[in-house]
Amino acid sequence: GAGVSQSPSNKVTEKGKDVELRCDPISGHTALYWYRQRLGQGLEFLIYFQGNSAPDKSGLPSDRFSAERTGESVSTLTIQRTQQEDSAVYLCASTAQTGGAREQFFGPGTRLTVL
Amino acid sequence: TQLLEQSPQFLSIQEGENLTVYCNSSSVFSSLQWYRQEPGEGPVLLVTVVTGGEVKKLKRLTFQFGDARKDSSLHITAAQPGDTGLYLCAGAGGSGYALNFGKGTSLLVTP
View 1: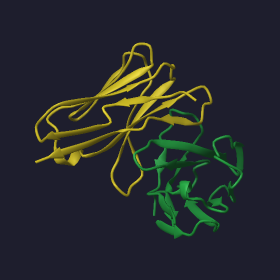
View 2: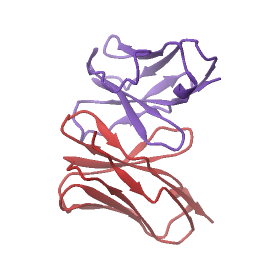
View 3: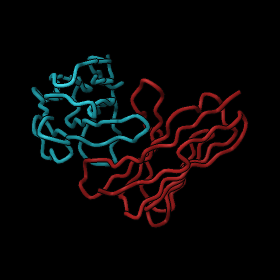
View 4: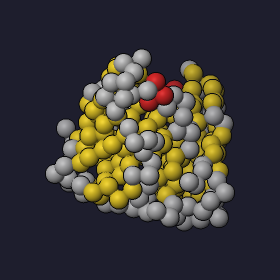
């Protein structure tokens, strides 16, 4: 497809387990973003990639969160030892270039539920 | 972090009514975007405003960027059920790459 895809669409896990969330950006988009959206809240910036590098990781809420990107394409967000407060929709977006005025194209998100 | 406050948080109106939602901040933004998000989907860009005082129209939607580039409004004329969704404003700040999102206005338009 031509858009941003994310998998899985839904993930239910038990507290303490690790999870991996995947994002496939639009082909050729160099910048990739991860956001978290809690119920009734706006989007919370987590991390951004320019190519395979992450210049700013300051949005990651704790050291249980990590992300990587390979081949200037697929990105994986990993949450270790999940906690109930990690429950949220995790959204990925990509854009052709960096710069706040660029349109960010979002995927449908992964809904994570930690029991 | 440059905070964006959106109001109202929730809005329920009947088809045909007009409405305005607001996005306010104490910070100056180089540009501001409005997105609409439907349940189970990611946000989709509606408009980007860049110049202070700028007004953009998208069919029945009118967007305005404040003169000081700190606030914005979205006015919908003759709302339709298809306008239902979460409207998010997002400001581009000094970092140049991250967008600061407001919490959104959840709009319900009933027939």
